[in-house]
Length: 234
Image 1 (cartoon, rainbow, N blue to C red):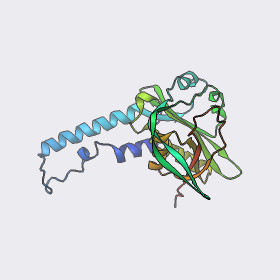
Image 2: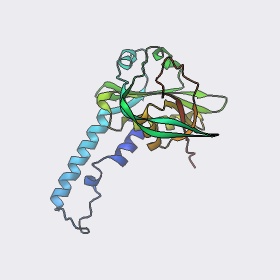
Image 3: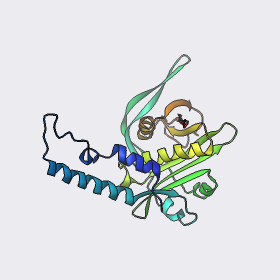
Image 4: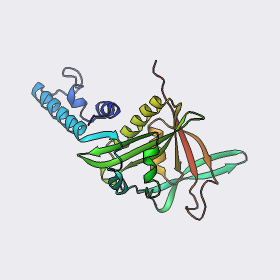
């Protein structure tokens, strides 16, 4: 099993232990930390980072061995706000709005799980040999666009950088596939997903008010699309 390079880079750059691992100025600033304490923090930080890297792994899909574990992933999310569509002539804006009651979203994999082996790129996240995440893309040959069709992290593993690591790995995968960038669909009611994609470098690129059957979704649920271009390696 191999540690994903993108996961390792993310761990090193964003780890809260990085300051304890060598970024403390011993001579400047208002706080002075004894050298022994600095060394202890450095060791503790590197130990914690090593545990994170060795336990958290990204790997290719194992089919059909992963099927049951992926079906068991908790893909639900809760939010207290959404984006409301506002029309003004030929202009459209999305306004952040507080919901009157919590909004719960769930993305069942039951009807799509067996299509995973046909995807252009799939990665599974593991924590101590337990499947905790999934990302899957399909390359559209005609326009060289990679569609990120699945991105899920188990509820008990959220907030630890796994989704970001999967996205960065997907960007690397898109580059290897020869894609111009990665395109993703979500909904105005999935506030957390929209904010996450924005934080990871995606930008709004469109919406579709007629994509979903109104009998199947809430009144404020509209499809929105985001895009992140692949960075060319010079």
